[in-house]
Image (tube, rainbow, N blue to C red; front, side, top):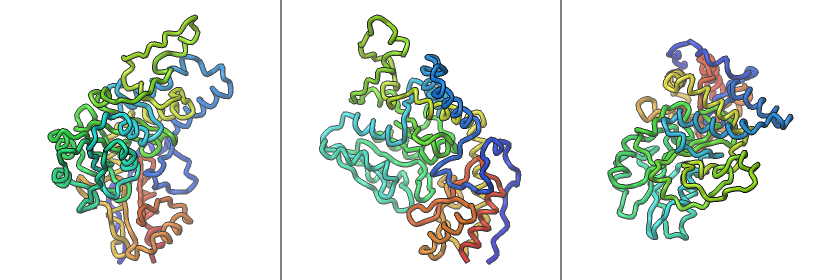
Length: 392
């Protein structure tokens, strides 16, 4: 079978120039690492310069670094800045919840069998507190609301799911599942690591109780960055001893004759920030990356990346490859997961692509393609040609 001609616009988005250079390679692995934008790269260089000449690390810059990032993240997800927690990963926020919720003996946490380990492991550590973890086996690739409704019992306290499943590219119905959990009095925690930055989210209206995410994938920030958001009602019940000095005081306070070490109750989500929030090497470029993305408008980014996904899906030779991720519909994400018809050849295909400068990932034995805003229609065509050649 000859590969079908690709469809969709050939236009290159204006923001593509703000990334790279890629030195002739095609990076289709944003689900692992998103490329750093030029504004973020320049911000990182500024931060390094501050450390090279430490007098440039002024008190103002020291204090503004976390607050600039917090405001940028809040604007991106429609949150109040006082409800945003600065983190170093998605796991950080999940562990805040796992270790801080006042659990009752017999409480149950529901997760999905085969979900990413980050969404399962934190809850498993609660066994000695009488909390059980029940993995639900989906009839498809991810859980539907009706499957969860059938599983919720009188002891079910919390449901934790990935918004976009890393291993299959399927997206859950966030709204339907969230509404169900609200009706049943179950806390709903969503890991947005494979969605935030390419799928718009407004936590002021979405029926979620907590969202966690990372900065180094579709937000195109540095590794070791992330965030968490929790509804204030959820955050206020946490029983977690964390009183970081920079969230209770300011660096200016250190110059006073005497320090007031009274624990403040008015610091909001800052109380649970990861330690070292003036982490200028990471948080300065992360803030620049988020600000840059927000300025493009995520709806535009989503539409552009979806056009690249459509181009790939339309052009994939179905005699050679099987599409695992959804072909269309609300369950489709910007992660494309495929397999050679002979699944045992996926590793060889991956190696052949890498040798040609086409970078994708192998996950759960399948091939995962994750374009982002810096990719072009020509990148997709080149990748499709390489997939064809590698399969024969």
